[in-house]
Length: 121
Image 1 (cartoon, one colour):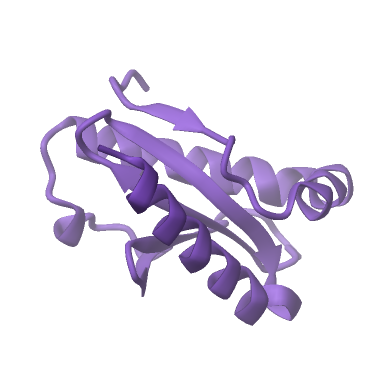
Image 2: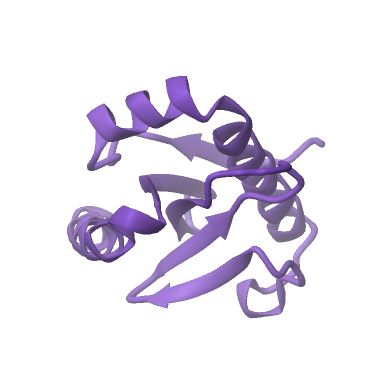
């Protein structure tokens, strides 16, 4: 799946948690990243962000979007939080977490998106 979007993890706010989840829940994290690829392909095809047709994709407000995992049997519920900079065609991964850390992850991702918005021309 080819896209002209890039993925940037430089604004990931919970690196330690992301690393631990990546080791413990490889399939779930891989599924979230594959689903991000599907979203980027849609954006690359010109689909407006509000018309992305996937049930695992939804807005969390303040420019932050949630991408869930799919297709992993007996999975730990995992979510990837991203924001998109359309001028540079970059998807910034801001946070990743489980249902247990959801509130904190969303708040951290919103804060990171706010700082990113200030830093982006």
